[in-house]
Length: 209
Image 1 (cartoon, helix red, strand yellow):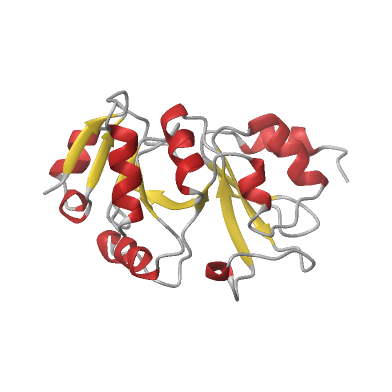
Image 2: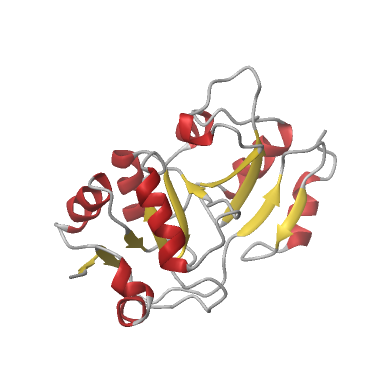
């Protein structure tokens, strides 16, 4: 049976952390949409995310981190473009798709990957959770190709609600995702325009080498 707790409930953080530690799936509020979370180092939990969403397994899952130290620990290449964007919109609704630094170690679960998409959300509960669990794979809490539910009750009453262990209720959220910018090459490319307009990204990077 799925447990639903408000984000300001004293038991919410422990319940989410314990469910994730045991290989479960947790729906969490973010500063954009509700997300479906799992620990990336648990292959079965990651497979459960794909099954719950009906997501094609060739589509890699994005990662959420509590701070820049957690991002750097993924072994990503962190150059001037990243510095400029992160200084403006992290924590916030910006996801960046990174290449890897060939001189830096990376976690085993990222072996063989060319890129990883990462975000630091501007949400107090979620960042507290990430600080205790480490980075999590988090994708929108909806079946693949369907609209993202705006409330925890919509998640619980929908198809996805049957596949998760804990749902953290953060109140009504938006349906608009983060803006995704690929910073793996020499220039930044907006791959998905979300909360942050593409024009704002372009202005922020004008003159950055």
